[in-house]
Length: 303
Image 1 (cartoon, helix red, strand yellow):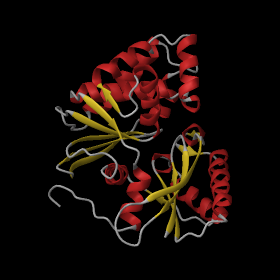
Image 2 (cartoon, one colour):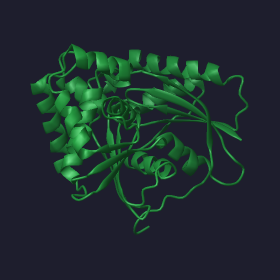
Image 3 (cartoon, one colour):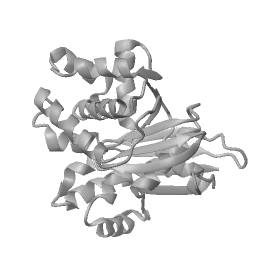
Image 4 (cartoon, helix red, strand yellow):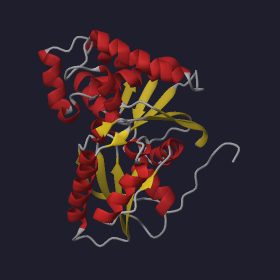
């Protein structure tokens, strides 16, 4: 059985097609596509503009064209903060349905965090810790122990929104980086987060880009220490031509959001006293597939 999953994010829109066994849980990715839609940049006075809706529909139609020759059991489309955090969600959903035929499911912040966890546990051998997904418009934190979720929450900042609200040029200067850090700290203080976490599991595009840069500088694409993360953010405090060239070689489509995302991650690591960050190749799309399509339950503390 083949299933397609489309994720409408604030920064990127992604299509993944999976081969799913009739029994067992070893899904296989057949192919994936990504478009830097940047929908968060099309929000005016809290609403997604007509231009933003057109951009979203355009990408969805491109994805549809990619799926015409593939036999599929189902096409599953969901949105995260991109449509969750706008004031005209229902109007946008109606337009998308009329123009593409897709009925988009908008995930709550908690649902997104839980599905991140479901996907990640299939990829990383961590039994306990904190799962972190720094998206374009929100950040999800999921605490778990013995592979059982103890808390799941969503914070109203992401790499793209941090950039949009704080940065005047392509890369943030030292003062703008300090402002980003303060904004993240302020949001973390509003919620109850684990204060002693030894290990973090990172998922999503920001984490993937961070690990690509970490691999270039430290030679490890799968594991990052709090110390090496601090060294990375320190090198980026005064981003000159060499830093720009490095980012362009490593993650060119995230030239503007990589530093805000790294600052957010480093702030979370500092606040939780985490020592090690691992990268999961699975996240919310795989979690959606496992839970909503294949029926895998989510193990949560106290039911």
